Amino acid sequence: MKKLWFALMLVLALGTVCLAAEKIEAPDACKHCGMNRTKFAHSRMIATYTDGSKSGTCSINCIATDLKETKKEVKSLQVGDFNSKKLIDAKTATWVIGGSKRGVMTPVAKWAFADKKDAEAFVLKNGGKLATFDDALKATEKEQADREKPMDHKGHGDHKM
Image (cartoon, rainbow, N blue to C red; front, side, top):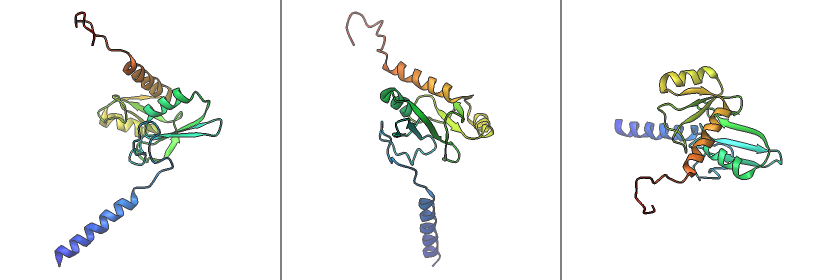
């Protein structure tokens, strides 16, 4: 009987956890990489353009791609708060660049926080540095540009790689 009771409680607990995972706004998948935006609600972004169109991505990396490709005028940018996962204004958020916590679609993590104290607590625990949205976007654009550069093959003789 104890095993049956335990199994029932386990099923109920797992069901509650599944229901607690709140579904986020459309789209379900990132426009650029296909990642699940609900799973990455803590880093997702939404760009709203002045023509009324919107673009939903999983991260600042993919929103930087979107901004570069669309060349549309931006009305607003929102990002998921790292802790609450609620959408906040990306430009007024406190950002953290770097640290030990692995980033989304980037070698150097970039996280947004609605409250500067939360960002400071994150830095104390995980490292990184406080930044603005402009700092985070510039760092992202630099990473993307560095990935697009052809590799330097000096030291490989005359053969082409």
